[in-house]
Image (cartoon, rainbow, N blue to C red; front, side, top):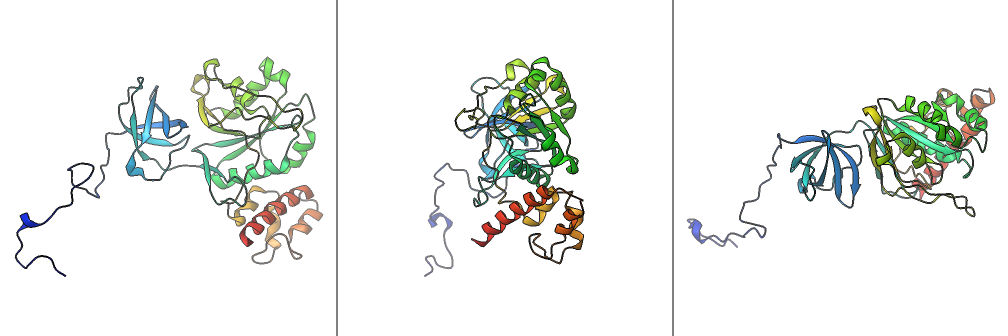
Amino acid sequence: MRRYGKHTDEDDIRQRPNRKGNRPRTNIRPKHEEAVEGMVVTVDRGRLTCLVEDRLVMAMKARELGRKAAIVGDRVAIVGDLSGEKDTLARIVRIEPRTSVLRRTADDDDPYERVVVANADQLAIVTALADPEPRPRLIDRCLVAAYDGGLTPLLVLTKSDLASPDELLELYGALGVPYVVTSREELESGEAIERVRKQLDGKITAFVGHSGVGKTTLVNALVSLERRRSTGVVNAVTGRGRHTTTSARAIPLPGESGWVIDTPGVRSFGLHHVDPSRVIKAFPDLEPGTEGCPRACSHDEPDCALDQWVADGHADPQRLYSLRRLLATRERTEGD
């Protein structure tokens, strides 16, 4: 029922007050043209440390961004107090478009996607040759995530003084992935560090690997003393490392020659977010063999051309096994 007559007195109309102030609400958002660009280097419980020019600024995400999260590596627009002094706080009002994204899920059944790093150029997959034993399936999954997210993979093999790298290098040789092999003695002498630095020069590189492989030890050897992080040891009973890095952090290399992003150690690398049709992109040694596959081939059926491709010696059977294992996992997830 209409409450007021045809000729109402505006003074008689009740106005619901704004509980948060008297300023009228509006859908028009400021453009923040005066905002300064920065780079997110750490995220800690809702507070983001950003590099603005040559200083670190603590910032919070503006409410107008809604649920859109800023992560390490993001280029952001910041307003407010940009002095970087203690107890000051700025606001992130815009997240710039990302050139690459490294994502993962806790496992293949988990639909919740975790964005790990943004705008990295390459992904350094760090794997120990022993103590703990290498996990080729985890390497394969990291390769899938790298290709899917637009990052160039780099294989870093540590602890070559404990085991030979030949078997792994033979397994991934057909992929053409660049690699670096290091030993403890070479790390101490600095010889291995120079080889790694050549691969990182001028790039933003995210480091990933399961706990205990020497990932943070390697990062510490690459950066200056005041930026080093704590390290742990491998459990002698379980053969697993202890998590010492609990959050991702971007660290500049000496001489402004690039950035490394150290990420927490992972025990699993879920690919729930990856379209199964893109998984084959991480296996360039197998991809040409799919030309003879029937339409909508799952690559794990009797008529799949990959069996003949491998039988003809074009790829290692272990590579096809890895591909089919990943695809089978994905198919089980979708069928649940």
